[in-house]
Length: 105
Image (cartoon, rainbow, N blue to C red; front, side):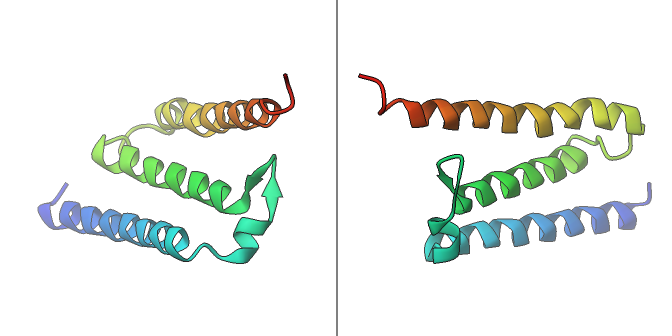
């Protein structure tokens, strides 16, 4: 891979991660009412937005800085799929069980 192409790729990923992080920071500071008032599984839509953006950032980090982007599609899927399946599943279990904590006792 040529040096210029590699540098360009890193800058593109940098800007993608920068924009995603900036969105997260602004959402964390301003906390829009339509995101904090709407609940899904007992958790605000704002928290679900943070989870989605964090998973998206993790995807770009793994693809670029762990050099997974140049591998075969089957290897990419075998590494990335558990992240997009298991992490939301574990968060679902955590959120559902946390909502029952106050009801017992």
